[in-house]
Amino acid sequence: MDLPQPLDPLAKTALWTASMRAREHRRVDRLFSDPLAETFAGDEGPRIMSQFEEHVQPGVEDPALAVRTRFLDDQLLRLDADGVRQFVFVAVGMDSRAFRLEWSPDVLIYELDRPALLSLKEDLLRDIHPPATAARVPLGVDLLADWAGPLRTTGFDPGLTTCWLVEGLLYFLEPHERDVLLRRITDLSAPGSSLLADYVGQTVLDSPGMAAWRARMAEQGHPWKSGSDRPEEIFAPLGWRIKVSAYGDPDADYGRWPEVTVAPGLSGTRGRYLVNATSR
Ligand SMILES: C[S@@+](CC[C@H](N)C(=O)[O-])C[C@H]1O[C@@H](n2cnc3c(N)ncnc32)[C@H](O)[C@@H]1O
Image (tube, rainbow, N blue to C red; front, side):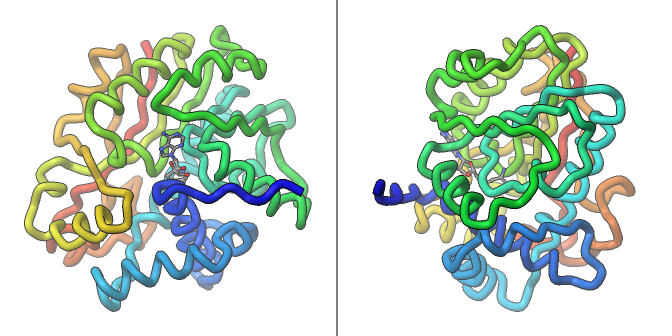
């Protein structure tokens, strides 16, 4: 029997986000339901979550993950309703949307991440075999290398309108790595394709209020490396028209975004954003 491959520190952040989704799932006023999240988080996800919340933000439950998950759920289902059938979840981690959202019958979701992470996910799914609500194609790749070739080999059709989901990734990349990734995505995008992403503002990233958070992230081997105060400068030259929602805007609030303290970051500062882009 093959031994499980160890996860690199950045891949482990997927267990952390699963753990936060499991916590949201348990709330009476939950913004989404995610019954698989607890299994995906395992023992390690809650441990990582508590390390951050106890040591960096004592007593604070960060609302960003719940808000971003629901916001992106809504956007994905809107695109499905608009007729998009090809979705690529870039750095999918333990995202369980292929099981928990009500997709149209002919939707196909490509799930890209590190081979070790996807292999763990498949092992966990084999144990509980939940019914999928969309066809899914997991593909183990290094997103910093050439993943476009392997994606095409699995059947991805660049001639179709595609929705790309890049959630929980961009700030872990150096600016040039981010730009190369977005260029590859753009090259595979038929006109009218969509790109959904989240990112952090550079001013907030560089602010004293973020110092403890950034130090802790770096110590754990998954530093935040880049942000942007002007995302249009990243997306527009590639031919994407973007709409940016700050957490706490009417379309990205869901009654959860506190006005006074936003964690992590500065008091009264939003600093993190959700991008909805359409290719021209
Ligand atoms: C914070 S998790 C986000 C996972 C998921 N999108 C979510 O929101 O729950 C970051 C993910 O990026 C993946 N990742 C980071 N760098 C990668 C790379 N070079 N190649 C493949 N996957 C990568 C990690 O393995 C991890 O699953």
